Length: 551
Image (cartoon, rainbow, N blue to C red; front, side, top):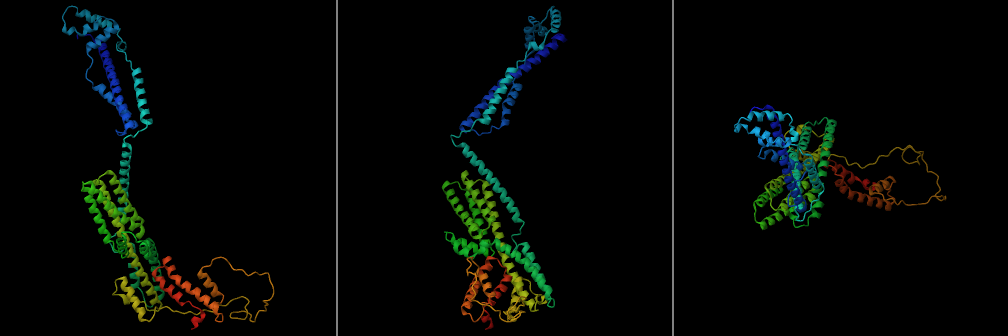
């Protein structure tokens, strides 16, 4: 085009408006297409559930974004001739600007005239009038379409005629549970790995027993008071540990529990496992866990549905036996939780139809944790046995110390607690007794009240009394139930041992025998440490009627 700066500026302005108008038009119609597709997919998802419901609010950005992309990328830019024609139409200049754009390809003496007329007309051209933007209606239509899609997205319910939603929810729930159980397993495994389960005893108990051995070696024959204080201090520490361990293993160590709860088809197996744990060994159960892990490997590779179902039943049966052991025979909540996690993970895998690699690994991790829980229980059983042995050794040492025969120099060659216990008990046997006196005498206390002439500091003489005098006293018997021990003490305080009253003596003896029969059960119920049981038994054995003691 010949040199015409004013006309060229107008043509450029109109060209850009044509380009923006064309992009806007294409974007709008592309939005209509994408919004329609979005609506159809949304309706299909909500009414049939055949399409996953992924219509979060942010997805409403997709139709306009894709429409803009199409609008800018669509081929077909406006030409200069189209811009000139738009000006000629708006200004009614009879193709003046169109002719101006074609001067380079034409020849003639009229070219300067065309340029002059175009430059003069360009001053009056308004690009906005030549190419007006009509965007209001399309913008309102776009906003209305987005509003409708948003309402459908938020308020249109989901129907499930083919059961797809329920299946998807179940799969999602299974995956979530699997992730939660896996996390719980990892946390518990990390905790157990810090407890040195491969050692014979737990670090805490091992340290306490080592301290007692050092105390035994430090005993001095000429320092009985210091020896006693050391023994009592160690006895208190070890006794507390014994009670805590005994409480944790109360169900496992209960013989009545073993006798009463075995009646299922796995009775002999459960009993064997329980006895193994009582003896401080988890090797047999560890082998059982390894077998289960191997069966899971086979299950994961099995393609035959019938064979897979049979293997699942077999694994379920073994897990149920483990659950029975944890609940009824061991009473360990941690072991119950580990086995329960494995059972739930197996159920989740069954619902998927096939055991995936991830599910198999999660199951094996749960079985590893269950094996570690069993190792901890076995270690606790060994702890309790070692603590009991230590308390028995302390009891024997206290008796020797009371006789002035406790000397650490005599035990330089001893290294184990069992050796100390046997050595102390052998010394006591050589001494001809347990080192404790069995005196049964009763002291004559000195009362400060007004006596009747008996023992004590009373004034003597018989108090004048007349039993025949009538009073308002009414003889009644209390209906309150009294424990046997209280009855015994009450009878004893009233001088029931009077040899002249044979009926009362018999009643006293019957009450005493009843109390003696129940003290063993009381010791077990109260979890008395072994070091105290000998003294308690000696006390009850020493009880009897005054007449019996005089004999």
